[in-house]
Every structure is written in C-alpha cells, then in structure tokens.
Length: 355
Image 1 (cartoon, one colour):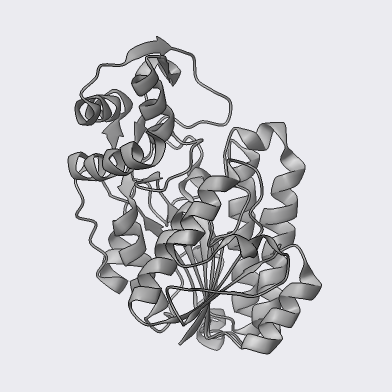
Image 2: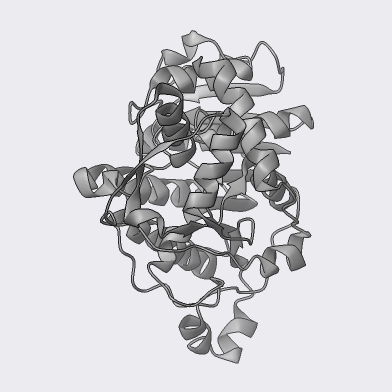
C-alpha cells in the first residue's frame, strides 16, 4: 500500500507517518514547512523520521535515513502543477490530507491564508485524487464545525450550519466539497472531525505548551472565559490508532452526514449512488474542565500556576464533547489514554525538548 500524507512536518502528520512506517507501509510525505510557528520544531519532527535539513529544498525528494520506504518532498498543496505531477508519478492507494492552515484565532488575523490552504489546496487534492483514481481520501475536518452548539455530546448527525470562525467555515466547506466528489465521481472520502488533540511534539500555539511554558517560567497562565470552558482532550496515540485503522480498512459505502442533508437524499438517489462518503468524530468522548486540565499539568510539573482570568476570545467555543459511536461501530475505535497518563507523556517530552 502506497500512502500520501500531507502535512507530515505537522503534529498529527508526523505521528501518523511514524506509526505507518513502523508498520511497513510505503509513505510519501509532503509539507510546505511554513512559519506559522517555529520551523525548527517541524524540522525536528522530520528528523525523527530520518529526514534531514536537505528537506528545505522545494520539490526535491528527500529519502529517509531511518526508513527505506519513506520519501519527503517540500511542497504546497496549493501548487496544483507540482501536486498533479506527484500523483501521476506515484499513483497512491490512499491519501491522508492533514495539511491545512491551522488555528482558530489566527484565522481572524489572516483569513486569506485559510482560503488558500484549506480551500484552494483541498480542491487540488480532490482533483488529483479523482484524476488518478485514488482508492480512498481521508481528510482532516474539525470539531470547530459544530460552533457553539448546546447539544451534547456532539454527533455527526447534528447540523453544522453555524461556524463561529473562518477556520471552522473552511473545514465545513471541505466536507461539502468531499461529498460532491463522492457523489459525482465515486471517490471514496472519509472526513474526521478532530477534537482537541494533545501530546508530545504538539503545536506551540496550543494550550498544553502555552500552559507548560508559562508555569515553568513563572508567568501567568491565560485562562479564557474565566476558566468556564470544557474540551474533549484526546491523546495523540489514540488519534493515530484511529487513523491507521481507517487507512487500512476499505472505505465504507454508507452515508454519515447531517440530518437535514440525509432527509434530502431520496432512497432512489442513495440506491443509484452508493458513494463512499462518511464523516466521523474522532475524540476521547469525555470532556474535561479547563481548570482540571491546568491542574493536571501543574501536578505533572510539580509547580502551581499563576492564573490570569480573561474573557471569551472571538472564535472560541464553550464546550466540546465528541460522540464517537460511528467510529467505534465501523472501525472499533477505542480511545484509552487517561488525561493523567497523556499529560505525563507530554510533560516528559516537553522537559526533554524545551529545557
């Protein structure tokens, strides 16, 4: 099986690539290594999979020194010409698109970056998959598509028509675009709504590293909405285990989509178009209060935090809580890492990398 993973210098992409390589898969990874956050962290992740700094060169394959079945290429998914060449040459069995401009708050400051990467880049991926008859496209959506829904747990059958950030809107757009390609071209697509992923090698703009940095340096921890937030924190190994199961399983033929959309699909249309389009939540299924999350980090570091209470930030949501029943049913997905265990692993890595 030959797999393309986009965003392999990113947090989830790095862990997924490493896991698949350890299992003997043939992987081609691409990433533009942008400077949204410290590129040294991205190169350090690549180094863990045997890719050296020669990866800085654009459109030049770099072979891994650790895994003979791994090739990395620095590339933008917005670059349609180079992407098409890659697909035509490699003929991938499965594509896992994790490349995107990340960050909810940053989308307020720099909206054009999100349209370029998350919309233009995604249509390039869809077109390349269609034209080269890719067997299955797995792609990253986000729990942010639910907006500030009051219904909990959040289910894939809920409507997602009220995003509260441009980032969320682009992810909802990806789901609609994938549905169209599954319907028109019989392209199997599986979208995954990720819920607050954390762990070693995580992004420095996300809560775990921000909190650990502040506590370690004796700076105030910024606590938004005065701490009245809950998140479905999900450890990276559980996320990767789910992704691997999906990648290695034949795509499903049933539709998992919004209730309103399902109601508009007649039985005749479903019978005539058994397209493989599905959406799943991938999370822990257990919301954690923000203050409890901070306390767990305090305990792992052995140091109390000074807390600075702040109002709600634009684009944020109050609570996330994933209903992962569809993923459990289809792929036997079972997250089993406790918050205490996950934070311990994260802090062990944090101390080694940052101190």
